Length: 56
Image (tube, rainbow, N blue to C red):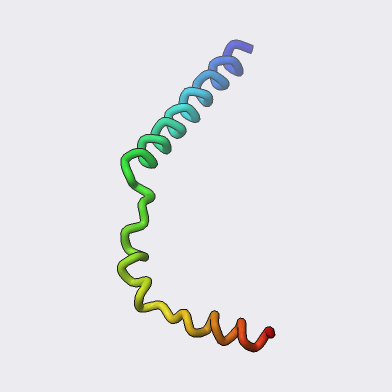
């Protein structure tokens, strides 16, 4: 029974460590998208307008 309690405590510590690492990465800007705005002008938006005209 002691080993089960020990494993639960260890698994909770590991999960807490991953949660802290996730929030640290989010606050550090790891998931900020800096690439898409620079190529957004190259993407073709004409297809959206054509689909809207054919639906009406």
